[in-house]
Image 1 (cartoon, rainbow, N blue to C red):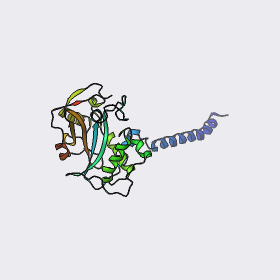
Image 2: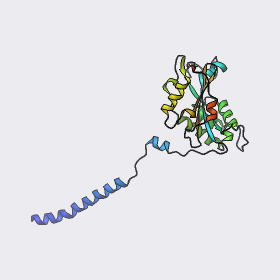
Image 3: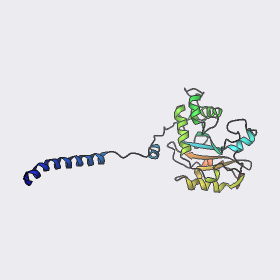
Image 4: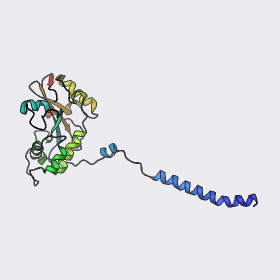
Length: 238
């Protein structure tokens, strides 16, 4: 067969292959990028509460509470090996002056066990979960499911200083240093958005203020109630 005939027969096939390659490239370019899990999580919609000005996330130093209330370690929170340092005490709707509590609601006072058990990693007691809903959650303008979902989201916004990650021995820390470490590790947080409270000489709680969208915000009244000691003792975790 003459060479020119072979070339004429190859040209249509070559054109077809090039066309397929071009379409394949266009499809790859038009395919939307896959979101990383962290990005999807960050973009999640936060249910917005009503009837208050801002939230206080209260993180309790569990060893202090256990020393005073369950020194024998009978409860799940305080038993030996529970390894609990800062736990979520609650997410409290707050006003610029004062705070609401035990608000009337059409929802049940009782938190179903199927819902509450999803949050025992944060609030290690069904009794405390129920109490937080009745006293504070009922004032959030949210359903039980949304209130506890926002509680988890608020806790996940906070990065803890290394010193507060369950120390195995008693330590003493400066109150101002604790607040400064929180500010340094949490972009957007300022020193008047976090408050350290104490029980005598011991660390009691860390209280962090958020707006309804869970952005850090100042809270002068909460800050004024902070511990007035220069240093606090952190009993060790067990």
